[in-house]
Image (cartoon, rainbow, N blue to C red):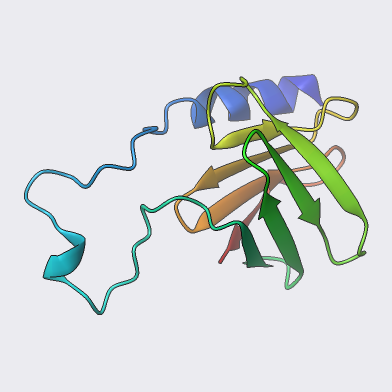
Length: 116
C-alpha cells in the first residue's frame, strides 16, 4: 500500500496551496459560477464516482469522514501545517481536498474522486 500511496501523496503535493484568485479573474465577475477555489466548508457532502456518498467535516487540523457505511474516520493534516492533504495514521488511508473534489485513497481499494 505504501508503494501506491506515496506516489499519490507526492503528486498531490504538487497541487497549489493558495486560494487566491488568479490574476485577471474575480469571483464578482461571474456571479453565476460557484466559487470552487474557496475553502472547504465546515461540513460538506460528496458524491463519489462509485455511486456512494460521504460527508466530510472540516475540523481545522483534521477531517472527520463518514462514508456510506456510517462509520466515522478521523484524518489528520499531513503535514500538519496545511489544509488539503489528510491521512489516517493507523491505516495510512488518505484524503486530498482540491476545490470541490476529494480524492479518497483507502487501503485495498482503487482511489476514487468524490465531488461536492
